[in-house]
Image (tube, rainbow, N blue to C red; front, side, top):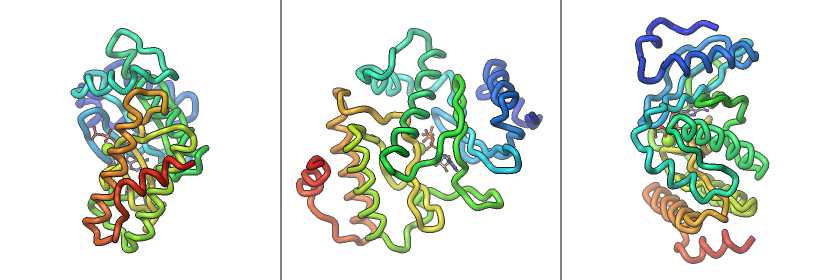
Length: 234
Ligand SMILES: Nc1ncnc2c1ncn2[C@@H]1O[C@H](COP(=O)(O)OP(=O)(O)OP(=O)(O)O)[C@@H](O)[C@H]1O
Ligand SMILES: [Mg+2]
């Protein structure tokens, strides 16, 4: 696998351990090249990679993540995961959580990137973008032409997830990509199952955010209570 020299300079992301993880994924056949940076965030950086001629998205979580407390919050209380002690292990569990949540969302019939592989703090998933490698923009920067249709589709996705006893918890115009006018929901790492003590609060937040977002796009949204009841009426 080729790792550009310029990446190696970024010691905060490309620690020795992360480099090793990337090489392991490459040897397992999941990655040939790591190319451009798509996004640099507080918790993770997302890169465009290539595998057997096809683009993939590679999300690399920082071991020294800045919002570490948030992470512990969402991990504790989710019966699917054991919270381990060291930062490193916790970030690894967090990465696996996003991977599992992607699988769950796909099973629920919700359009999210297809998860491809996950190892330590590295998640490889379907690249959301054009065939020639231009990543799709978040809906915040590429507004939907038909917001009514999106509004319905996103509420529908929340309901589909809820039916699977799952809540995303961070749905907004920043975490929905506009792929040729189709919404693709991303950034699902904080998502929890309904047993989690924060699940209810997260569901309310998602609904509020979606109503606010689409109201700002001129959609005649319903009131919170009727949407809430509609979603919970599974
Ligand atoms: N599968 C994907 N295909 C194409 N682009 C992606 C993909 N996943 C993420 N991105 C891009 O990377 C950005 C950040 O991804 P994501 O929201 O998952 O990370 P994040 O946890 O919000 O990072 P942070 O909050 O630390 O900035 C997205 O806004 C999007 O532009
Ligand atoms: Mg995000």
